[in-house]
Image (spheres, rainbow, N blue to C red):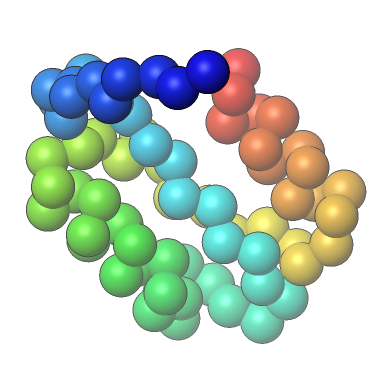
Length: 68
């Protein structure tokens, strides 16, 4: 079953940038910053940008928290 593409107003969509890294901080994370810049340039609102340890449990917890 196919679903039609729905065009949304970017102002109604919020995003969270989650970066998994054992060595980066918000100050040194260039890829997360690039994602943040691209998302906001398209008009979307980034409500948080976080860096978590690069392990399954930390990533899983960050995604669950983002969904709450």
